[in-house]
Image (cartoon, rainbow, N blue to C red; front, side, top):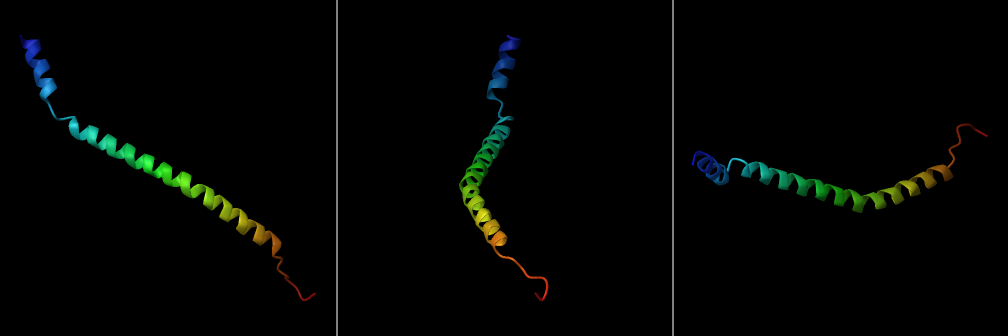
Length: 65
């Protein structure tokens, strides 16, 4: 009888519900961050390659030749 009462008390307890909510919210934020990184990453890579190409093409004269 005592074990059944403890089991019922454990099943009705809500102390871990907040933790589950925070885990779900944190997982959603991590997923959103990964999605944004994946989406923006390709564009940033292309842009940085264009900037590198432009900087390599331009030559700066440092003297009066």
